[in-house]
Image 1 (cartoon, helix red, strand yellow):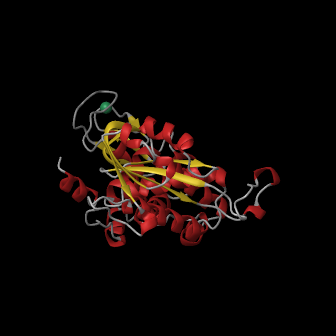
Image 2 (cartoon, helix red, strand yellow):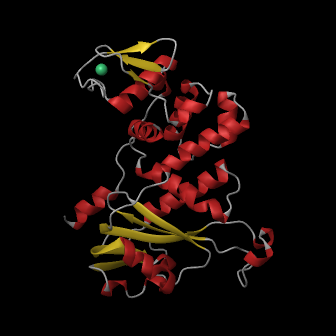
Image 3 (spheres, rainbow, N blue to C red):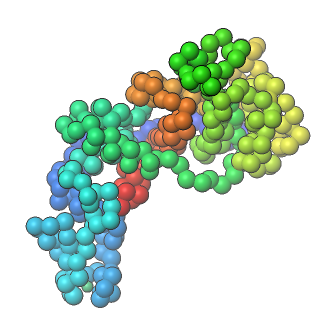
Length: 307
Ligand SMILES: [Zn+2]
């Protein structure tokens, strides 16, 4: 792939939306939600797991969350063993909560779910927690091709921290650093450190996650010195000189945009996020970022993982 093509690939494509109008049309009531859960688990026209008849019709038993095989009478319960089973929360509420998570840019707070669904805070929190767990990304293959790396700082004031967590010499600020690596396909790997950037801290994680046959793009920070020896190419953007795109046309902007949205999500939605919980929120923010152009697919993905 040529450099130009790589750079084009970095740019985000036009965002698709999943409108509330379409969502309401797709899932107007409990039955349509249950039907969706049935499809997600057993396919549209799957074979009966018991009698094996293909394309058999499963009839809905109207009084229960249950479908029955038209051949042998075998019953399937699409919510059995899922998070939907034990709660008395209507499926439409769950679906709407998932919908909110997939269309929002900055995440949804449990308080907001509570307000919109008119459920207790406990219920809202539980729903939010289940959905967020799904969004935490799974293991990824090594990043390669073109990878941008950058770090950012998140956190409150030193004086608000526990005594043994206070940091010295940082002018009252904590040093919660989030380090990230973004490849040309939009995949991100990130890690939280309670220290500033150093080669000793960053190089092991860089080596672990990036294939040697890669063009790496970083700012001029000391921690990144010497990467040209380990990777195909090392492109440096001198932010100190107000440079945002270097002479070769490389930039770290896409990752910086991601940091901005992560900070908006934490600040605007969750007010205060402790260091301990930060990785979860970063994972959610990455999930959202990686899937930002396909909200309907995101919706399906979460649903599949919930059943
Ligand atoms: Zn059957």
